[in-house]
Amino acid sequence: MAGGERVREPRRDRAALARALRRYGEAPLVDRLFIRARAFLSDFTFIEPFVPRKGFVVDVGCGHGLFANLLCEASESRRVLGVDADPRKVGVAKLTEREGLRFELGDAIATPPPPCDSITILDLLYLLPADVQEELIASCSRALPEGRTMVVCAQEARTDPRYLIGYAQELVATSVGVTHHPFGGFHYRSREDMVAALARHGFVTDVVPLPRRPYTDAVYVARRVPH
Image 1 (cartoon, rainbow, N blue to C red):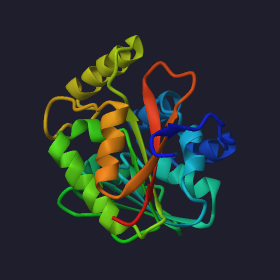
Image 2 (cartoon, helix red, strand yellow; image 1 turned 45 degrees about the vertical axis):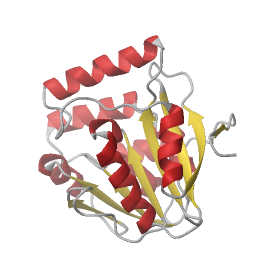
Image 3 (cartoon, rainbow, N blue to C red; image 1 turned 135 degrees about the horizontal axis):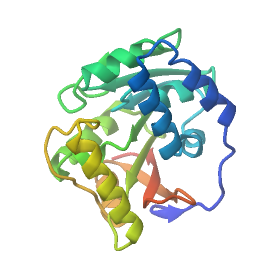
């Protein structure tokens, strides 16, 4: 049901995450430390099983490419393209390229995703104003055939101390330049607003809260339907 919750926790592949982290052996020390912190703070092993096990996946706003690497390590039947606007992060991600995994420097708004079987967007939309978020969701919808899936991870805006914790953490990350912040300000959406935005562009969405997290993160598993 659109906007419904699944309570079943997916089977996590922590060994795949460990293999993905080892791919960064040639990265500078500062980047390796950041990537390991990202692995600790972001529950990627919870999110990964919601991505289809095979086909061509585009990871929009891939950063250093850790989640893209996890997707490949968890299933050899996936081909993954990671795209990000930060040249330094893409440079580090490219150190891990191999058959079935590549990275490109690109603006997700100016350059829509290529036709693909699935799209992932993790911890990106809050950096984009609402109208730009809509533009990105629309371009992702056009890139996906009917019945295919887009997986979005985003912090929900709601009255909850955990929301304030996540907001404060992002203030620090953007102020020190860890997070690329092209538009200024944060643009978090409520769960209802996010589901409605996805519906406007042809997606039926299940919402899966991330368990035992200090933030109000949720996974939006959005299936493309006739629009």
